[in-house]
Structure formats: C-alpha cells, structure tokens
Length: 244
Image (cartoon, rainbow, N blue to C red; front, side, top):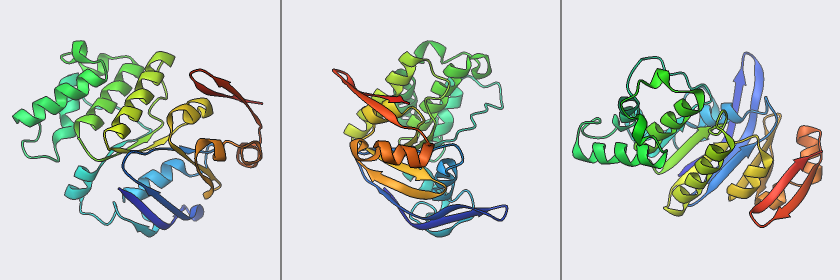
C-alpha cells in the first residue's frame, strides 16, 4: 500500500528527511512517533507527493485521481473554511468516485462514516458550529467516506477527549482488521504501544527504529530521540508508558 525508498526532503535549504525507507501493508496500524521537528508531517506530505522530494514513493508516482482512490489523508492542520453541514463535509470524501457524493453507493459510504464517528445526530448541523474535537471527528469521517485502502492521519487524536481518543484508535484497529493499512502520527506513547501494530521512530529526519512497539519503546532509543526515559507498566488493558 505504501512503499518509500530513499525519501529525502530539503526545506528552505535545510535537510528535513534523510533517505527514509518505509513499507506499509494491509492490516497494519503503523504509528509514526518522534519529537517535534523530527520530520513526521514532512514524511506524510512527501509520501503523498504534496511537496518536492528525492527518492521514490509509490503514491506520489500515481496521478491525482488514482492516488485519491488509494489513500485518504487527514492533515495536522484541520481548518474547515466554509459553513457547510457535517453531512456535506463528509460527502467531500466521495469526490474521487463516480457519483461524487450523490449516488446510492456514496450515500451508504457517508452514512457509514457518520455512524462510525458517532455523528449521526450532527449531520445537518453546520460544521463550523461544532467544537474543535467534534470537527476533528467530522474530518476523520470525511476520510473514512473516501473508502481507500490506506489512511494517512497526522495526529488524528489531538484535541479529542480521552474517551474519543480511545474510540478513534479502536476504530483504526478495526479498519486494519478489515484489511486497511494506516499510517498515524501520535505523541502519546502509551496509546501508541496499545493500538499500533508497529512503530517507526523518527529523529532528526532519520528512522531510528522500526518494529514492534516493544522493540521501539526501549529506554535507550527514547533517550536518544526525546532525551527522556520511560517506565512501562503492564495492565490488563495493555501497556502504559510513563515518561520519566
């Protein structure tokens, strides 16, 4: 679903990514972690061909129409510019498909996305009148309505309350179980450990580690990347990671 080879990015004469290699397949929830400025958002943008880069990306090699059917993207900046209804906002995810949001298949996809994000009662409400967390959920629903094999989401749980964070990450795991692939940047290491099948740790534009959460969330690697250690507490609901 996603294949990056030797991906390098320079912005304003400053190297941001250095020869990143990354693959992602069906059934994976790959968590992209690392300190601020490590290159997480840049990697997602380059993978989608939104910014210039050196190296190769299978998504960037596609034309825009095919790419829009291969990958949905939730950027970190989530401004809603127009006073459209939540339903119409979610319908924008259907633009790449025949019908453009008006066909029977489109309506089913829109209804399913609203249901999965718990937004059925908000469908006729103006999106600009939602709270920040509700707007985030509506934009995730738009990405779900796009019905792509791959979902790329930059800090999707930022601004959500704890219950909605858990609900969103459980949904991502369910999507993976259905055969989707997900690349998700996330700062909460405990939630990353619980819900991601694999973690990629970026530091200064390099992949410092790539593997199972137990392999990546090691004290020595976290000290190199973040300058902190971590205490792991195993619970019946999964591991809890306490930065120290």
